[in-house]
Length: 442
Image 1 (tube, helix red, strand yellow):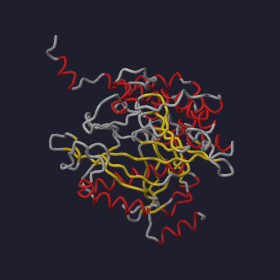
Image 2 (image 1 turned 135 degrees about the vertical axis):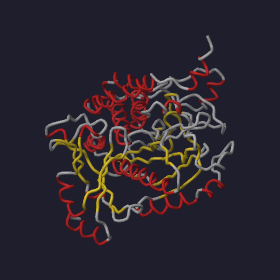
Image 3 (image 1 turned 180 degrees about the horizontal axis):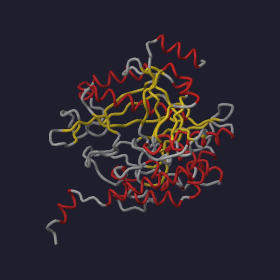
Image 4 (image 1 turned 90 degrees about the vertical axis):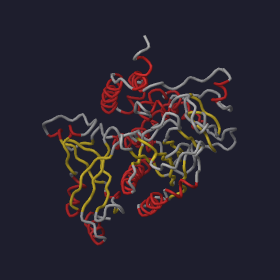
């Protein structure tokens, strides 16, 4: 549709404003409301923002490259069910009339161009896990549903019944927004849920996840709850992942990673992609698990429910959820990301690592056909494990020159700088555990 016909069609539906949304480097949605009637300006020039006010742009305080412009992607416009009169629009970042190298959506688009040169398309299925939380009068965070306290709460139907208002509003809103819903369930921790929807081409999948979060934040607030993407809010319970199900098709629509004759149904290209993920896993951790709290999830810990799926070890296996990479019928499940990641950057980095594995002809180690947690408990030799904290992950990314070069130094430099600041700030804090352990110990 043309810009004029889009304005006409949206106005006929009662739309008067556009929510121009982009992502900062942390993966947090930002934007502003602008008039629909000026859509031509928002598409061609972009909605303007002060560049230094946005995390990770690297833009200065003066000059024509101090302004961040979010250019509306016309095909992304759709009315928001929870904001009457407003249409949502995805934006690409520009500065000085050029695509901004530190814009994570532009980052993903550049990696997808590399794939397009091969005639390939990346498909991504994203599995959003999240918590519904509330704060008590003392400011402590708790599961929003006070009756959600089973020792093993997976698939608890009573909790689904008690929270049917939130889930039904999510169903209605997501369906209206064009999501092809597949299931909703209560996950392994109290207060934890998962909503699954159909996979999509990589860029559309990332855009859709950002829209999913925007919707969930609004609907949870309506119900007096907080939608939380914190990877592990409760120490004795499982954390939330954001697993990527990855597949690639060629120009004829054939699956590049699949070989039905192989024992694991993986092609040579599939094995090399997996090898690239494992080879770059330490550096990828910084981008896929980018918070201090992420490494509380990525720990060899037990949980109150007696189940943990934390992908701690750099390994892969057929339908093996204890591995970092799980292969299923020629599809690759990348289990490292968590919901605190910038989804554009995480997919871009994952793709860059996998392509490097293909281009360098890497081979993965033998597949793992055992429960790695049982192996650890038995004292068996283990695969190498992921970084134990954000600090180690950041430094791993900083020295992974093949990965940072493929992604672009401008983005990686800003990301590493921000995350080093975050790690330094955390490292200077004195917490309750330290006081209990050391205050009167010596």
